[in-house]
Image: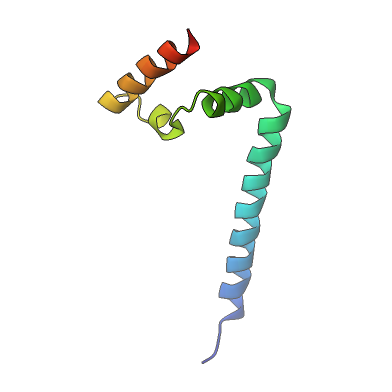
Length: 72
C-alpha cells in the first residue's frame, strides 16, 4: 500500500494547527484578565460551559438564571 506523502504532510500541518490552537487558548486564558476571570468563575461556581453557547434555548435561559443565582 503506497501512502501519499502529500496527505501525510497535510495531516501533520492539521495536527500542528490543532495543537497551536489549544496552546493559544490556554495561553490567552492565563494572560487575558477577563478570560481568566470567566474561566475561574465557571469552574468555581460549577457552571456547565456548554450551556453558554446556546443563547436562544431553554437550556441557556436556565443556565443564565443559575449563573445569576450563584453569583448573588
